[in-house]
Length: 243
Image (cartoon, rainbow, N blue to C red; front, side, top):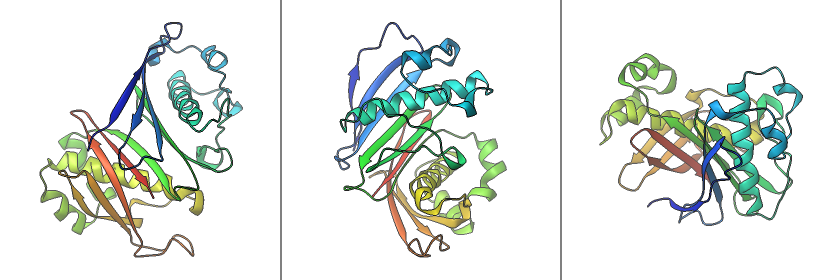
């Protein structure tokens, strides 16, 4: 199952945005996903005004790198929200910098140093929504951080796959990041990678499953399972949980 992309012409007046795509995931047809590629070297602060995106006070003293990531993410958010007929929304950061979405909307943003994604949907179609996009780990980094991301059972699972261990660990990391974003609106605080265990994934159907290892709220209890979908490229992994 693959992305179906609709290429949109680049705005030549804004070389910060190099390309942008509206993406459809066939089995998640109530979801609106938007991606852009950007050049942080072409960032300038006046782009906030040009794109009609608020430069929040919390960003004023941030490095340009952080401002460019934020701008690209909010640019994608506005594009995705327009598919829900919501225009000129002001997606400000709330606690722990989590985006505050319009009433009735679920949303999630992810970005790297050159790409940004945003997924949105009506809360009448989904209860949980989280996305993540990660650069594939090197073998060295994977071995250094594996103990902070996975337990022994997950380690065994990741060794028994068609992916290299470092790429499988990137998937586990990204899947748990997507789960965090999907559950944060209900939990309202950080929780560790140990809160959920990756119990299944397949590079054939691109699906994975996470099971909570502890109760996070009265409704999000130990043993609950969450299914997700992933897409691996030669350099990155994209994961999404939408249910």
